[in-house]
Image (tube, rainbow, N blue to C red; front, side, top):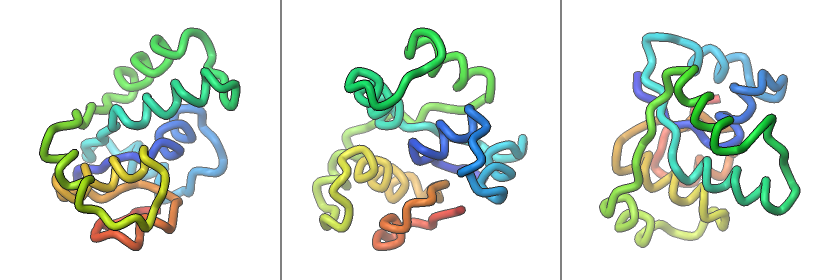
Length: 128
């Protein structure tokens, strides 16, 4: 199965955070699944680091790149068709990073691994 991670799912998995549900952790860890990370996630993480809301162990670029590689995650690049889908989304969710992840999930027909119930207002499958 192909999956798209919400930012908190990505962080909680790589940091082994107990807030990640057991089901989500199992889906992400399953070698049979293709796990995708959006640039929106590492953009959001970088902003949170710059605002002092989060700190990464070491340089943030090294940390994110190493975790993506170490976990064999793939990058779900942002494409013009994702932006076009984003422009058509209703504003159920105000977070711009989550909205982009939703748009990518819709276009690519990927379930999103997220604890955020706001995703349920969109035509995407949310796994948690």
